[in-house]
Image 1 (cartoon, each protein chain N blue to C red):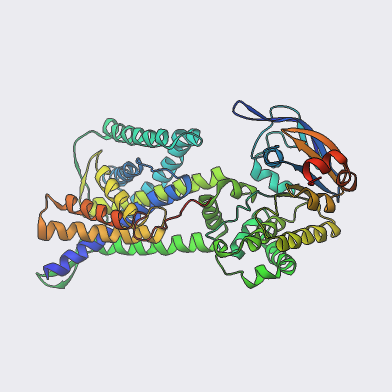
Image 2: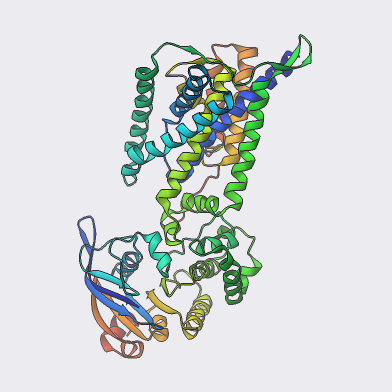
Length: 292
Length: 233
């Protein structure tokens, strides 16, 4: 039974990682940059929901919607102010800027909301008991998996079927050629950041509902883990983010249960290193040789 | 249709295009020929808005392009089939063509596809195939078809024969002739000067960023200097 419990916990945690990893992978795919501030957008989303539900006493649905709205705008603003001016800059400059934005968000949160840890009230409470006293699934876990599936299906329909989604794929392959088609590349990049940040808000709320502590640095570790998941699955690949996220969640949970709580991160990263040694582009990533 | 007046383009400190002026009239095929590095592609990239000139002006259909971004220029009726084809390798043939029609209304896409498939039956056979798996000749056809999907008033072709077997080069030029007969205005950049001049109404010869000769296709084909430099004597 404990095995099943762990598997369920792992999959639901992995679903949250997958949703975060999507943000990394989509932004990487189109802007060819690692947005290290992505994890902190998660934290902002969680705070917005926390304040809306706690201080303003709004229902949780409204809290989530507010979090999504705020993070969407935040994502677009970050891209416009911090990354867009660096479109032609070396990738190292962009990377360092992203780290800077990450600290900026963490410290702003500390000024605005204080450094003290807050207890997040889950957006759904209770659990589904399957075997009394032995096997139960929290509603948050169910919600996480459902959200992950919905997001994946919606995204694959979006990128596969809609004009805007196809334009996004075109931009991620070749920006100059996309411009020659009449695609507004800047607007497409903005949209990608908007989608990624909206997903981060959802992930933030789910994350804090499952593990109800909230502080200005709440987003950084899940952010790094989800980034690992994205690399694990193959950065730039949407199914890769899903696979990487779920695997990472499961490995982490099992490592915690059967090896050591303290060593779980070490196990996760060891697996990552092995995967990258064998498949440098990640599990589902495509290794694209430079054509001459 | 297109008037380019005294453009100067720089890559950093390198002065790539030095005071180039030329024009393309309605229904014409005009070619820019010249050696590798003469600046032919740079001129096309400047006309389509990917690069910018420090001086002069570019007029297209009585509009000054100036600082109009590249994606807006497409809407005005200019399609650029870039050097090296630059098709979207991971998208299907049909998706590539749909991207070509990005600026057009949804209702125009079907008839556009029909027209392109009529011109390039090969593309129809392979419409569900991922574009990266096409042969070089098919990729060039796709790039041209994608350009035509925007129903352009001016079609710019950059080195359409590059890297293709002679028989495919013939095919591509046949298509250019057909497009010309159908009234499409074409600005053609080629290293294959003989082929280019044989389909062109007029041509300009480019050397290190400057226009050094101009005339009708026939005149240039029989010009001693051009023969010597570009047509193998």
